[in-house]
Amino acid sequence: MWRDAIGQQHAAASGDVRIASLVPSVTELLFSLELGGQMVARTGFCIHPEPAVRAVVKVGGTKDVKLDRLRDLAPTHVVVNIDENRRETVEEIRAFVPNVIVTHPCAPEDNFELYRLLGGIFGRQPQAERLCAALQAELNAIQARAWPARKVLYAIWQDPWMTVSRNTYISRMLALVNWQTWPDNTPQACAEGDCARPNAAGERYPSFRWNDALVRGLDEVLLSTEPYRFTEDHADALERQLGKPVQLVDGEMLSWYGSRAIEGVRYLAALAARG
Image (cartoon, rainbow, N blue to C red; front, side):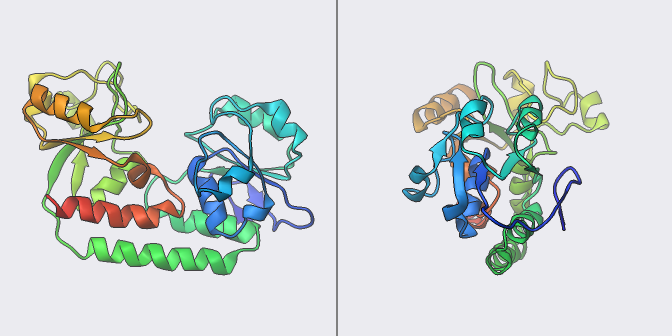
């Protein structure tokens, strides 16, 4: 038996296995585990790996799943994520899908458990262990270096501007190279004004407003290519406005868990090495 992110136990899949993934990075992982042949449904945001993923039927988005279409595809297993999918949608899916697997990686190291969870349930333990070994090698390499501390703001949206708090996968990924994300939502930091507003302390994806005090405390701003499609033009304009370095970064590399994390850690090391 294997235990998912909310403590549910799952037996090894057997018989006619039909998998639906409502999580883009998990869809890519399932293909990496050589489960593409059992995939029957995905979201429109599940775009990797190309071109193989095109053969899998789309059932809406991560937040607006087309339940009737999903029901017609008769999956035996649906993989969801606490951040990506709505709880009420997941509860509706439970009414017609016998196995709902809940995921919630919150740090790069959590991928080991994710690989083994899905590899175990779907009989792909050797493939899962190969992924574990590849990720461990990248983590060993990045953790072997002494990275200078930098305070960064990782922007994921504008109108309103939004960022990530330190209890997110992205922030913990950046911490591998000693990049500390703003805001530091500890009680002391909030008392000293280092909290995003207007949200309360502890928000995972808080909104904020640019101001002189915020900008002075930053070494660099990172604009992610997803979920908002920031471009080099956005980065150039914001750099002129703030008078601080602003860098466009690949959001998939820094926020996607699953098999993408292996390449993502390598990408982050190269990014940090450029200074």
